[in-house]
Image 1 (spheres, rainbow, N blue to C red):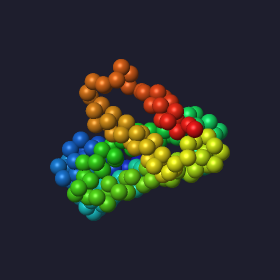
Image 2: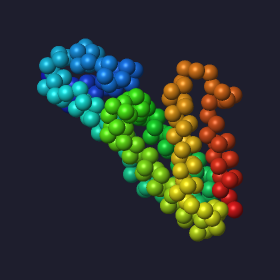
Image 3: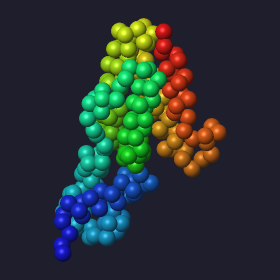
Image 4: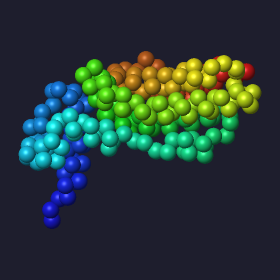
Length: 195
C-alpha cells in the first residue's frame, strides 16, 4: 500500500522539528531531514520546496490552538486563585505541547523574527483573556484597582518565564526543592491582587 503524501509530509515535519530544536535552523540540512525521515531529498523538495517552507509549515501545523476564550470562560468561577491557576495550567499545557517549536523560535528569533512572532500568537490570546478577566474581577471588587493590562502581564510573564526556565534548564538541577511550584506562585500572585 502506498503511503499518502500527507503522511510523508507529517514525517518530514516531525523529523525537522526534532532536528531543528536540537541544532537550530541553519545547522540542519535537507539531506539530514531526508535521512531522518527515510525519504529522498527530492521527496522533501517536492513536498515543501525549501527548508524555510518546512519551518513555516511547522509553525502553522504544530502550534496548538484551541478556542481559548470558550474553554476558559466555561471554567471560570470568579474565585481569583482558582481561576488564575486554571488559566496558568492551560497555558502551560499549550506551551508543553509545542515545546520544540518554541525552542526553534527562540533559537531563530534574530534570523527569522517573523517565525518568532507567529509562535507567540497564543501568548497574546491568553493575555487578552486575562486582561478581560481582571477587568471583570475589578468591577466585582475582587481585584485591587489598577491597570488590568499590567496585572495580566505580571501573571503571564511569570508563566512564560517558568516555561522558558524549565525548557532551557531541563537537564539542570532545579533551584527549588520541587519542580512544580505553580500553585504556590499563583497563591502569591493572587494575594497581591486581592483588595
